[in-house]
Amino acid sequence: MSGANTLIQRLIPKDKRFFPVFDEFGAIVKEASAKYAALLQSGDANVRKQYAAEIERLENRGDELIHKIVVELTATFITPFDREDIHRLASTLDGVLDDIYAGARRIVLYEVDKLPVQLVELGTSIAQTGIIAADCLQNLKSIHSPKDFAAKIRSIQDHKAKGDDTFLQGMASLYSGNYDSTYVLKLREIFYATDNALKNFQELSFALEAILIKTT
Image 1 (tube, rainbow, N blue to C red):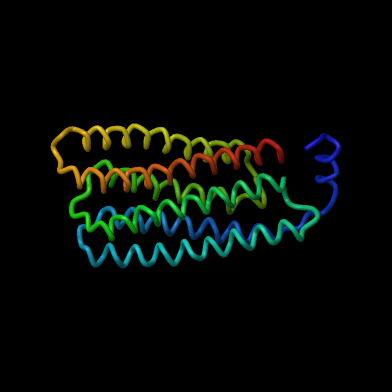
Image 2: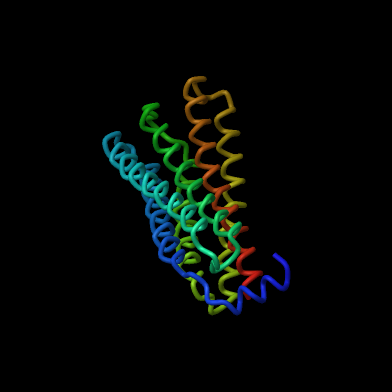
């Protein structure tokens, strides 16, 4: 966006219909993240199925929200911030939900009994990151403290960095030769789905960072 267009955007009243949608999107991601962490911590197959069903419901609502955002983008002349940033936010949030559901679904369908401690730790990181992400999205409408907002963005990135170490430790354990090959194949998919959720949270942080830079 050119400097002239940026100035024009700051002077013209903007359509704020996106903010309630991102508020809801953030709340959904926060809830799904918490339920995924709880699923990973549970050893009860029926409880896991219940959590997976709830995550599926949230993922479906996320699909509805991203469709709504795309429709609004085509109908709105002046947006609160760049259209590309709005679409990037929506896409990464949808990606988080897709990956969380992918992990939950595999755990249930593959009938995995015991989960590695590293996978449970990744779930905890996802739940914590979901809380921060929801808070950032709720504050998009009015960023009172850019410094605090930037610190929250950095916290999301820190969780991803910590998750990288946990992911590698988990994979090293899987490939140690101490597990059945079928178990390794099942867990590998679950590990990657969980790690991908954290990657999408990281992408979300980059999108938030871009918005912060352009609007303050």
